[in-house]
Image 1 (cartoon, one colour):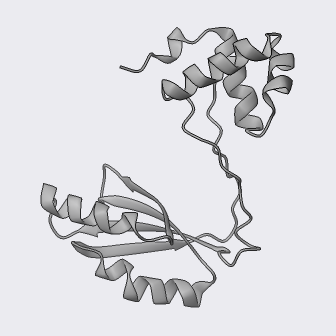
Image 2 (cartoon, rainbow, N blue to C red; image 1 turned 30 degrees about the vertical axis):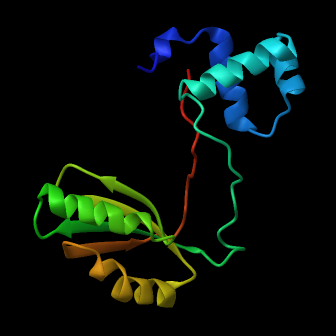
Length: 158
């Protein structure tokens, strides 16, 4: 069982905040910032990773420079809400690189997708050849993003 947020001490939280801002920070620099030895910090980071507080590290890429400038959110309503249909849909979205996120939601539709494409023509081709062909899809509503006002992956750690 994963410990709760309350079981993290102030140094653990400080380490998480610092790494959230700069995951490439060296262990030595991190140790200097939290006022611990490099060995103690390394042990804490390894424990935080092992316990699932740190899921991994990645570079944030610029979608505009890499041919994925159009951000589109899609509401998906399935024709049936049975475990089999949910499983088939979830398996199908896993293998599509255009679908960056997929969330099952409560409300008037079943899933909310976050997709990236080069432009509207590319999105239209994706919608016709992939999106509308996903298992169980009855209806979709598309919301093309005109301006990305805020984007963050940072959690509020207090």
